[in-house]
Length: 84
Image (cartoon, rainbow, N blue to C red):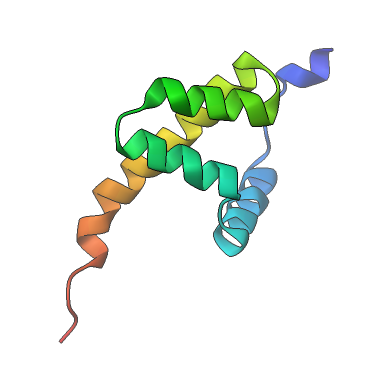
């Protein structure tokens, strides 16, 4: 049980982010982000809970998707500039 509380290594985090960048999001994750965009947090939680099985995992997934949306909104203005 103690191994569940260990910190994830830098290498593992890097590999996960690389896979996420290459593979993108699963269809249910895209649906959750669309629901979060229009402000339907409770519905997004229900969709996540249905796919993932437990309330705790669903809450974590919803927070992950909302943080992805925040990063896209904050970083989106920088990438839309035209290069001359």
